[in-house]
Amino acid sequence: MAKHPRGDRLANTVSPPGSRSSRIQDLLLTLGDPSTRLLSAEAWTAFLAEVSGAATVGVGLRELLDVDDAPVRDSGVVTIEGEPARARVAPGRFLVVITTQPGGPAARAGIAPGDVLERIDGEPAFDLGESMARLRGAAGTEVRLELRREGQPQTLTLRREALPAAGNHVRSGPLEGGIVHLAIDGFSNETPGAAERALQGGDSRGVVLDLRNNPGGAVDAALAVAGLFLGERDLVRSIGRLERSVLRSTGTQRTRGRVAVLVNEGSASAAELVAVAVQDSGRGRVFGGRTAGKALVHVPGPLDDGSVLLISSARLVRLDGREILGRGLTPDVDVPWSGSVHPPLDVPGDVARDPQLAAAVRWIRSG
Image 1: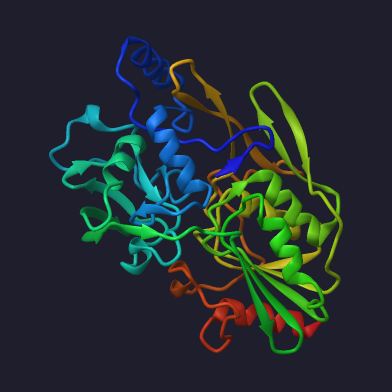
Image 2: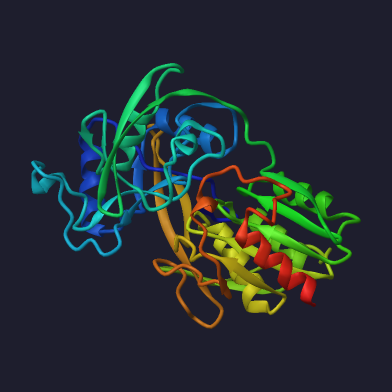
């Protein structure tokens, strides 16, 4: 999820009971924007723990970062047999997996980008808030998921477990020939500093910036990471109902060699921003698969009862006006590899087993 530099991360959840909440939900339904949502104070606390990278308990599907309300590609009007039409959020919209938390139960079970969550413990998974409430629970308890992958149904039972803190989201290591493999699986306040430290003294030939399975995070952190490769420059446009602006990278360029960016279906939001910036600047090339196309900016609207309204305030587009939302980023070099969508991937990676990494390294060495 992209977070506005002046806002906090948000998600939707089951709305608190009461007439005001019902009226707000009615207004949101009229608005027709599934990314603008109401959340309760209780779930806001749980959500902040998930997206801040704190230690949590769950199955490794973080709210809004790893799972989101999205149209199912090539779906037409999607229905679940036996469910009334009123249960649908909108024709063709379901909860779709963006990526999975590295090393968590969902990742180990093979859940992958594009998988559609149809039922959780037998209940339809149309609403993100209600579904996240069912996914959460005590460590050691089980949850049954019914999914659909490329039209084929699957049923998995996952055991909730304690998940460690995510830290700064940065891993790095040297590849042969003086190339740095820098993997970033999210963006938090600690990410830019950790990425800069990883680059110190190791850019003699080039950098593989690995954004595979990075669902996004704080926009200001992503702008600072982009600055390590581009310096200060215009990157993308933020287009909203009330405001239009240009987002610029920040800080000082710390790299001189070639930059190869790795992306896949699990690369979304702020990760797409960084990949687009490198590609459009001509500073490097992008390798892998098409990204998720989830370029929205959110800001919070706190309410006096402790609940919060998530407002989808803007979308990110390229400087020339090309859309990212719903389309994603097409890599310069398309390198299909189904194994890339099951994090965590090795860092430094093995070019003999990772064709996307191998293609990136070949290009850097050719310069």
